[in-house]
Picture 1 (cartoon, one colour):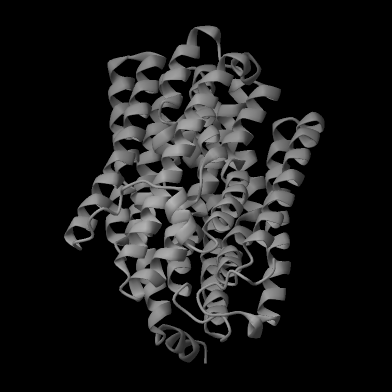
Picture 2: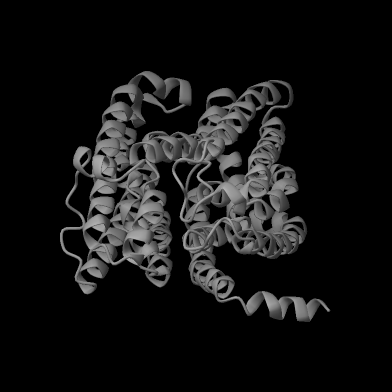
Length: 450
């Protein structure tokens, strides 16, 4: 009976496309995760725990600032660009991509200026030594490329997940190569900072190169001519959508980097390094859900939300992702400690205790991935904002409180609670949207109330 059900699932062409695109991304992410572990292992073994923690904090600061100011322009491109191309309206598609590019430029420059101005005042609180502030400020120059999501959105709309998969291996590969060179060459802390910097920069530029080439191949000229107010007036509901998704994702995208900064500020760089190791393993373990989400969202945007089809796809995708999560959970519990000891050294095995705590939320993370996409499909992006904002606020409070009482263990407990809060707060408006699906219109009606 089960095999018949699975055959029925895979007879759905959209479901097969979701799984296919997720497999593209998954294969590259697996390689990228292994390369990322090599990079972290070289840094962990080549630096003292305190310096390794400082490296993590510097990267987290730039990444966190970028996450706070970043507009989710890839979602905007999928939301508006998919129907435009479906109608063959290339002019509207140019408006969509130009508007997205303009937002990326503006937010990147604002983030760069803010990050550079605030860093000298925050460095001591975050645990960055005075002699390393200049390196940290150099690292902040990556913020404009970190915030840009336009090329990702273009490749997703044009169904070039294979190219995204290739690009996903560039940064970890360069970081691993640089880590090996820095470790065996004895280049020290500055060497690791520079190799991480170059890896991030070149990886981001590679994504831009791929998107430009794909646009040229399709004969779409002028798609990356930045503009804000003109396209914003012509695209109905554009500003509302980008501001709402910006606030929602800025809150949640900053979760990891800001967590590292808070742990470093309250417990010191060494604890920040341990937390980073545990979070890296957890993120790697939960990647299948992220990959399914990236493939799932563009596909359901082509479907009619008043029918059961997209909602059924969500349940099937969630079940598969949750099942994968259970298998990964067992693997992490059984093999996490020896892997951490082998890769990073015995002095970092304490991170395994954190990892065990965090894996308690792994199945929740993986099974709940379709919820956000369903809310955007239904035009309930404001509900997503409220859910993510409330969950993040609860997580931040718990992080401070539990660290105060339980130290580094409290950070792991807060992480689990935050993940569960997010899933719960996302599920409730999604259920309401499903029950009221008859009131929705095709391709995200802007006028549906939040």
